[in-house]
Image (cartoon, rainbow, N blue to C red):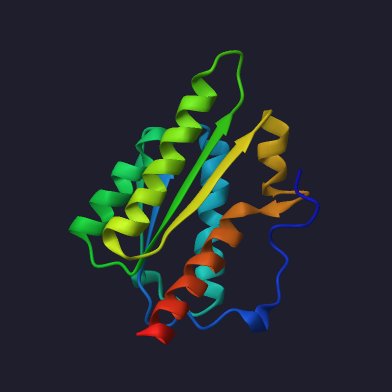
Length: 161
């Protein structure tokens, strides 16, 4: 279990996002949660200098569809990094395991295939309350953390070029 607020970080440790272009792909399933993650990500990108016109948000039906939505974003837009936001809550069947494994592997494959950051912003929780706690609740917002990660990975890429 997370022991810190996901939205707390050293502001000075995050480079400027000015001039960077971001895609955000959001799962519609559990939208009360994923919509809050998307809002957190957008606000964090803007707080660090990203222009509204440099943030593209698209939706896919569920978390399993995030990697393909991310691939479409990489192929049909000109974004520098893509944030994938979803939520899978444990149920009574193994469906949870298959979805989590698939989206995790799919995200890793995209990072390597496109040589650009695809940020895994997927909550994989035991119950709805744990998700709410991580989507703007008592543990902050995983969307904030995903946005900061995207900015830092783009800065690293730029630094190493």
